[in-house]
Image (tube, rainbow, N blue to C red; front, side, top):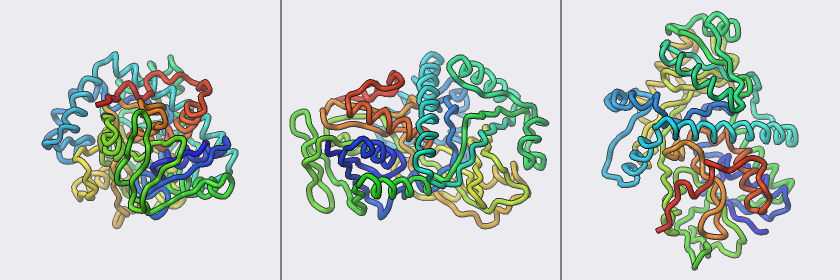
Length: 419
């Protein structure tokens, strides 16, 4: 089968590799000069397979009003006359209901654990070096209330396959000595031992190179997609900056936050909206972490990538705005200075990206009303984490073979409207 994948981020590249390994003839189209130049360039580095609580949950709901007026809040909504943002926001609020949040947590954990299995197999198969650390993730808490909530979530996830465990701060410091120097009052920690970290940019670029060399995947870069055209119940052709693309048996939508813009051209509405995230990169040293850490108060993650530390976080809803706002970067820097006051933060590298976020949390994977169009998009902050599992599920759907895990809560029809 001839398959065209739209997008060369980690989700698109991993999909290309897995489909090509099954014997399909795969072409990837992307506007950037190389793979992994947008959301897959400088993210937080965490492979957080057991992070299964969506942004939309009852615990975050009462914080929204306070965060709305706080410029450096973990989540910032910049309201605008955008019907897509308004619709997304209303759906987000609806998904904060306890029963819905539990269902979405279950779907995220099921996909996360499956992705761990597929990622472990992919690492063993390819031998790709990407600053991989398989040491777990340590979540630290600055309030007793948040720590208690995390333990309740941990107990819920334990019933469906999670393996986290709560730690005292003495136990956390014994595991990660850099926390002994923190200027924050910490009440406890949760260790997620199944989780890991690594450099998404290195991984994606090296997997793309291997896919091209080993399986003949064609990567066509610096080609801008302008319009998708349909005929009846199929995607007929793609209008690009280099002419028309057609003749493929299947197309895969993996354009991240830009996916809904192109899908609307086909009469398909999906509530995916850009959530801007920020990151800084600074030198690792004696007083920086050796494992990946999440500061749950500020929603900032820290990963050691060789001789560098990557700190990333915050969620800013401001439409398709790529500007790196100094105020938001400074919030990440302040958080790093509090948690690791002896680290070298005088000239960090700054970056921002637009994450493709669904209002309920899980991505959208699988078939669409157009018989030759499939989706693998909407992963929000978890694209790196879920890439391997999502790609395997997509390949099974395209090949029309039973998936190894249920697709409940992950399929496209739950959030898709055909106009």
